[in-house]
Image (cartoon, rainbow, N blue to C red; front, side):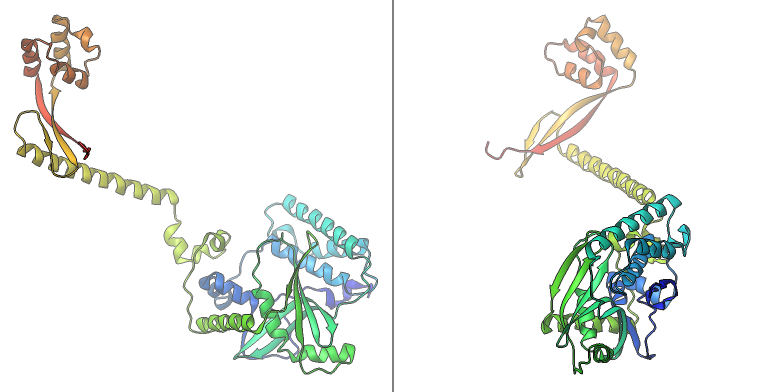
Length: 403
């Protein structure tokens, strides 16, 4: 098996396009399809119904290549040396150029290549003394169950004896919160799979009526960390499988409404085709601008309404400046203001009567205060009034109920 370049065993098989021993005609369904539909039904339609290709993603290529390396590592005892693994990795890596892999720049591809070499080095160091070839590597099977043809590809299956197996799934990303649904799916299918029974008999000579998943493992290759799960109980599996069958029913009923979210839409290749995206993301600036104009118009309408109400209140109040305390918790004060036609003429009057310095700044507010000052000569006030137009405005504020 040293001539690994010629071994079909080591070529990665996509979960969506495995090569089963027997062709089935049922509704083919896998965990990846289930997961995608749960993420966004419309995305599922674009990919699996309409057959629209997605852009290549570097992390997909990286993951596939590392899976191939691990499959090669466990293919013999003793395992290949690190140098052999690195050589295998390099050959797999060079099958596509950086654009085909989905990288924007060759430099980014180089970074991931070096990352892969280090990952393989650390993995080999930890497992270099492995003396057991796993029961199954990249195990692909179809099972006809409940009106569908369910498909899995298990990265590795270990046989524990007496019909017990452990399923291992490799992850090339960093450990994080992950659902156990993928492992539930694998447990359900493995325990209904006749092919695995025949493989156990062929390899170990045990003739069994059933297998039992003893445990399931997520193995994070980058951190060399294992997250182990015990066997899911019947209630968990039944509840999960009901969700799977409901999902299949929705697909068959052509229920493909989009379910947008920051996570699912962030890197979605189908956004140009999605009605949600097309309707809401032409331009955030345009959306904000429209909201801004609506707000401005609303403010104008409210200001006009405010002026109308103010005018009506003023008509009900006599010409004297007064404060009205209402039965509600407000007080209304009628305030006299002045509007000047010619500011320079007002300044001249103030200067002639040595009042300009008192005002300091002949603003409307300052002059209004001057006109209310009882110490100012009424004749001077009259001259200012003749040059001004008197207006009224309201101030309405909460009233202190304790007084």
